[in-house]
Image (cartoon, helix red, strand yellow):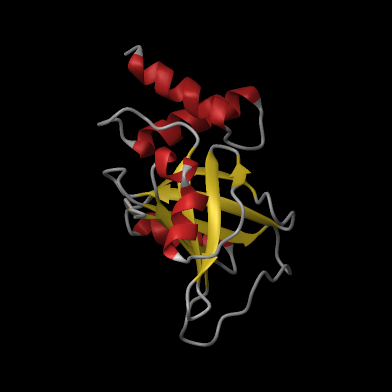
Length: 176
């Protein structure tokens, strides 16, 4: 049986990235990285973490004024999808698990350090199952790993956080 380990992050579509970043930072969320959206060149993706590093929020917003990603109904926000964290081992057996439970989804998609499968709930809500390509050791906070991986990415001048950046970040923490 499939075992969801927790909510990975809500991906929230925003009208103005700067204003949204400021809002969530006022709530105490810490920015981990911002990078181009791999699926839409007119938008960027930012990942923020709670202070304890246990939870994340992803913001998806336009690269510049005048770009509209999606319109929200007045009074209701727009969420691109809800992502649940699963283990790498579960992702390895995902299609077998999904077949056995009668769940239909996308093929596995590899995006940098994440492996994803997209599903749609009965109400049309897009749900994503997310596993990291490499798991940090128990007790190593994911937020700290992502923050260090971002430093490594920036030092390389790379546009995206990749699996190699995560591996290097984990290694740097393991060395002390």
